[in-house]
Each structure stands twice: as C-alpha cells, then as structure tokens.
Image 1 (spheres, rainbow, N blue to C red):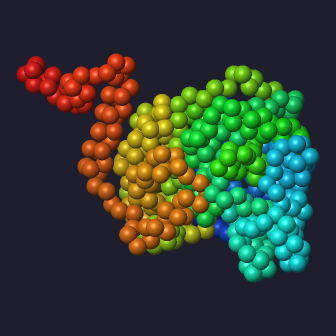
Image 2 (image 1 turned 180 degrees about the horizontal axis):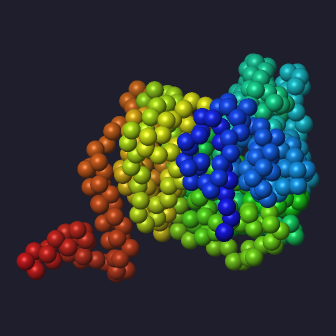
Image 3 (image 1 turned 135 degrees about the vertical axis):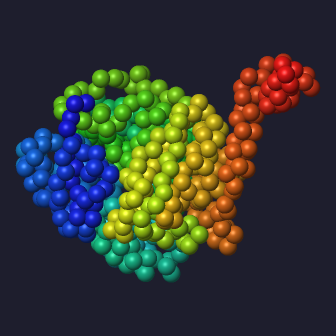
Length: 480
C-alpha cells in the first residue's frame, strides 16, 4: 500500500519479529504490559514523535479500549478501527445486549444490566432457568466467565467471576444469561464505512474452544447453509448500523440444535482468526480497514461477496498438551514452517527466539485453504506433519491428533466439545503418530478424493473401482 510501518515494542520484545521487519521501531517501556503495551499515552507519544498519521491497534491489548480510541482522536491521529462512541456502545456486553434487543435482533435470555447482588442473581437465574452463564460486562477471551448449574453454586461463582473480571479488565461488573446447551459459536465478519454502507463476508465456525478460548476456526461453518447465512448476516448488519459502526468488526452468535441463533457479543476489532475469511473471500481485511479509516467508501456491495472453497486455522501455542497445556518458555532451537499451495503461516517467532512468559503464548497461526472441507483437513494434516518447533513444547501434537478425530471430521462439534475431548485424553495422551504413517494416510485420502471427484456418474466396473494409485502403477508396468 506504500505505507511505512512503525513498530512499538517493550524491552522484552526488542528482538521480536515485528520489530525486525518494521521500517522503524520505538521502545515504549518495560516487559510488563501495564507498563508498555497498555500505556496508550506512550504509544501515542511514539506516533507523534515519528510523524505517524494513524495507529493500527491489532487484536489485543488496547484494540477495544474506547478511552484509547478517544485519546488517539484527541491527539489529532486516526485510529484504524471504529469510533470511540461505537466502541463504547458495543464494548460493554450489557449495553450491547440492550442495543441489539432494541434493534430487533435475537439475544440470549438474561439481564441487560450488571448484577452484583446474589439475591437478585438467584431471582434472575430461577426465572430464566439453569444452567446459566455469568459473563464479564467489559471483556472476553473467557475471562470473568462461569457456568452455573444450580442455585447453590451461584453466590461463589458470582464473586469469582467479578474478581476475575476486575483483574482482567478493571471492571468487576457481571451479567447473567441463559446457558445454551452444547451450542455452536458462529461469527459474522463485517466491513462498514463512514458513509453508512455495511456488508457481511460470510461466517466463521468458532465452536472448537478450550476453556472458552477459540483455537480452531473455519470458514464457512460446516453445518451452515445459504439461508441461515443470509439471516445471520442481515441481523449482523442491522446491529452494526444501530451502533453507527465503521471498519472491520465481528458479530458473534450462539446457534442451538434447532438452528436458532442469538447475539452473543460484538468484537470491535480485527479477529485473530481473520485469515480464514480472507482466504475464502479473497479480500484483505487489514487493507480494507486502512482504506475505510482514510475515509474511502466501500468499493463493493453485498452482491459482490462470494465464498470460494474452505479454510481452516489452528493457533499454535507454546504450551505442553501432555501437562495440562501449561505454558512452555525457552529458546526455539529449531523451526521449520510448512509451505506450498493453500498454506498460510502468520508467525511471530523465528529460530533462536526466546519465548518468554510475559505475554500470550501464541507462536503462530497456521491457516490452510482448499476446494472442500475434506481437502482442507487433508492439507492441514499434511502441513502439521511438516511443522517442527524444537527447544520448547507446542500444541502441534494436539492438532495432529485432532485431525484424526471422527467427530471433528464429520463437523459434529459444539463449544464444549474440545474440553470433553481433552478430558478423555488426560491419561492416554495425544499420541505421536509417525510421519511416514501420516504421509501414507494422506496419500490414501488424496487418492480417494481424486477417484471420487473424477469418477463417472454411471456404475463403475470392477476395474474402474480400483484406486488411481493401482491404475497408475499398472500403467507404469505396462510402459516398462
């Protein structure tokens, strides 16, 4: 785009990958995030010092802070994201629920105001019925959340959720909503400009979560169809317009077994899983955010949006799956990342990098694309066998095992599925499948898919039913 990027970094990130590839870099404080990446004043000062025109907040730290967005505006800079007003409106989960309800979109039964009194909480929970979910008003990422099955658990859960919310977001307020049993978590990607235009770019399946944290995402959702996608997309656009939203944003829904969907929350930022949408729609969301922030109207309409193929993303963490997913720190002594058609790696590390304990243990995001979900999973499995991280533990073995899970392959999942799947393997482990065996499996999968895709419609003869591998082998023998 012809834009010169300037990175900011803490003392711990002096040699980080984003610092090494940026045109310029400015240190903003010590390792603790509260003294560096959460110091909006230092980030703004760095931007002014370097003569920057805009600030892109990424998808962490201050990316959903309305006060930071206002400070950026007050400094005469542009935040590449929504306005402070829209961020404030949709950043509070309780205010957002009220806005969505008033806009006529479906919401999960529950409160639209924070609940602090245990007796009031008991009354609300009894009215909507157990199980209920306690959620932090100001945050996300699984922080300040508690699933409550009975009245006996409610008071202590309310206290713990409030304490965790206060520590994570500086706001102890918590609200209550009905817990949808084994729902799917489906989100709609939006782009909106300052002129009032808004489009949705399909959906992402985010039901594969560990402790309320997404770790596998897909586009499109395996169970979805054109009708449900249209209804969810139009509801998401309605919500965004009610908030006067601009930029890239995501409306998250819970979908029950009867395919009813309910508003969950809005993420007023770029999502970690945005690559799968980019791979399927062919549209660069970061470029779009920048152009919208520069005042450009949307250059395409809803009719121009189409979904092609299937994409899957897995988040590679520096964690030990065999030891309860505890973070793994240390030096990366060996790093081999997968490559080839349909493979995308958004990485933040390199060989020789010291993985510290200061921040989120996410190392990279591996995203794959193929014509169908079946082929995308096969490509993902191949990429995972090529991926090699030495010196630290990672979640690579976990994803390799997941790619062989029958329920995942069938798309038979919900938001609690991964927690149940992990619990079943706490004693047996995730296994270490030999690379040779995986390669053979992939070859067989590829042959089966190719045979199916190219098979004639009429009933095949015994010879035609033989695999392509055998036919190719016989052809070579005959030529020999």
